[in-house]
Length: 128
Image 1 (tube, rainbow, N blue to C red):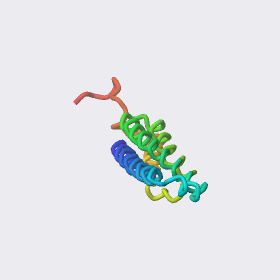
Image 2: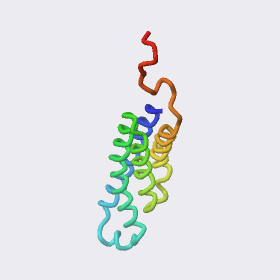
Image 3: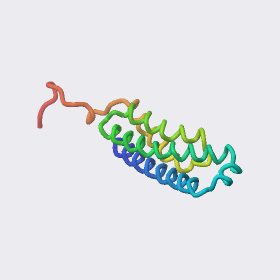
Image 4: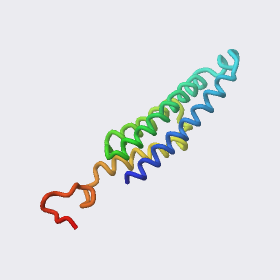
């Protein structure tokens, strides 16, 4: 589960960051008249673009935290990075779903009962 959370977090962060950069690039090419005519929806796409660039950082950090077995912190970071941009632009759900899936996998790994291979050896366990 560590590897799956790492891959989904990093991949989801990269996809979200790439879409955010594309949206900001398109937003930057508009002139003042086009921005004024676009209204609130265009402004929310610009804000969502900035949030998705932040999702890049949150996805990578969340994936690394999950790799280090800090599943709760990593899962929350990935979920925040995947859900907050959706408040501004719902059409990004397809691209952010990878990051959200990474957060869910990390939280499932956190709440999963430990397996014998996950716990360190105690003094009672024989050494092979």
